[in-house]
Length: 371
Image (cartoon, rainbow, N blue to C red; front, top):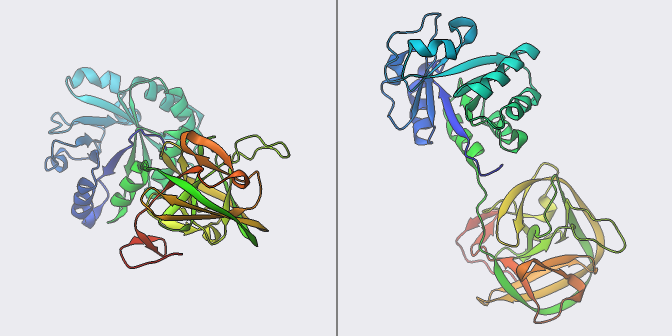
């Protein structure tokens, strides 16, 4: 997901007996807008959120109360443009259900024209949403899509890389608002990388190593953090750099021995042997930027292994065990690409010091020696 912040909206109309609980949860989670059919239901909401009125009958109320936005259905109320004269000073938006080519065309027109368009897509495909987003790429209006849960919200937020401007959660149960906010607003934090100095290189015999194949193209200064100890990880570079004997694999990191740690996200470690198709792993750039990427495959094969020992400026011991082959590479300062078998004592590597010990992947403060 890009850095664009996806708005979270909550539909209050069909929550029933859990309305108060879910509304308070959504307020706590920082939801941007709340939608109701009765102006009275918007009165208790704070002015820090957008209060959205969706009239339930064919007649619009003369007094919209505290509503900041009134969303109308053109088939029931007429177009937002036609109603603007009757409601001066009131921001008007459009609600449309996309079910076929004609309603998709209407959705594209509204998204290009209106200040806000709320869309419900009938069929389980993202193609109509892609078309609307592409059609309104240069428009200023806000597009909000109706979703059923946090999982669907996260999918919508990634369509065409940035998704709609907002997602509207309806019929929620307690907990779903919190999950939605976390899913669509997640941003992987930057890491402060450290410099490690190589102290020794040793042939370690044969063992199993893992190549991690991701479902995305990795950048030339990007890889994953790998290490024999959870408190010191080395940045192993992706196979995006040309090799004389084989084509590049820009989705792959020849990562290390199967017992090695890597980061599944900025907080949690996993063993390389635990990664599976559908897992996530943290891609890390030489400048410390990060992003969670999906794993498509992990190839585990027996190969000769090389043990690389190093030390951090803090004195922390560092070890990385990789395939004993020239084409397996790590990154140094300035994104320098270093062939593992060409490393010598005194060479410098890029890495990360998580500082805390790990227990089943979670950071924990306890006595833990790794050697």
